[in-house]
Length: 183
Image (cartoon, rainbow, N blue to C red; front, side, top):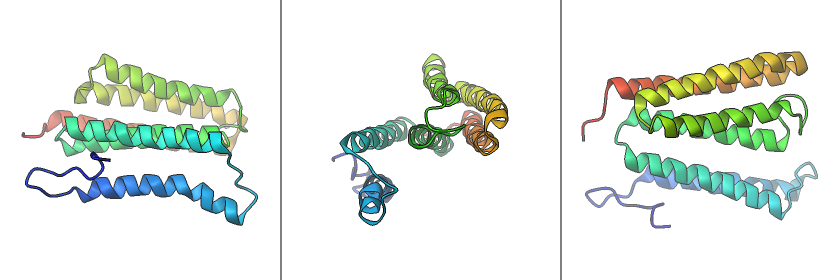
């Protein structure tokens, strides 16, 4: 809880962190409310645990990035990548991106997330290296989307949208590499 309302230098509380964590709680509670009004949403305890781990892990990962880098372009690139990975896992787990839920083609998209994490570790989270890793993730996702078009047209197009977000992240990391933040 201490990190959620952490004070900035000068004693101010960062409202963006409060908004971010409040949004995560809102997303977490949304299915609970939806279950009261429709039978379409039917979550059990395991679903809520999975969602909590996914939301909490994504939030904590961004908190770590925000503390380690003062560069806003780097932070935005990381936020785009984390949000993209979050949505890929969330949608793949819920209904599947390509084909139907459980279609093995969706596992390739999870593989792209693993590529992002492994690549980030290899380049030691440096902005120029992160730009290259995110560009590779965009290319891999676009290739999967091309394959996805043969299985499920909507899923293939949606996958290209995810590739676009990886590319946006790559551009932001490239910007961070060109214009490092002054500490």
